[in-house]
Image (cartoon, rainbow, N blue to C red; front, side, top):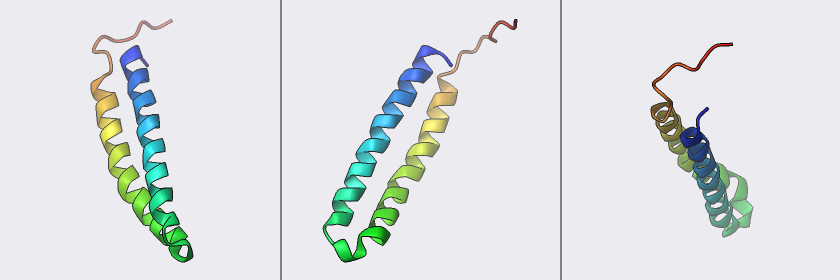
Length: 69
């Protein structure tokens, strides 16, 4: 994993944490429906983020093959 990919993973971690916070905030508005609202919100936000992250990280890899030992 090269430096650009590591930065991409770090950015992904921050985005997922923000999505988690948003999901908890929205679900906390109606405590009696916390779990379904949280799960619906979090998965709707997280799944596209993870798919996009996978595509971006693949595009950031080096074209040259790594040296084998």
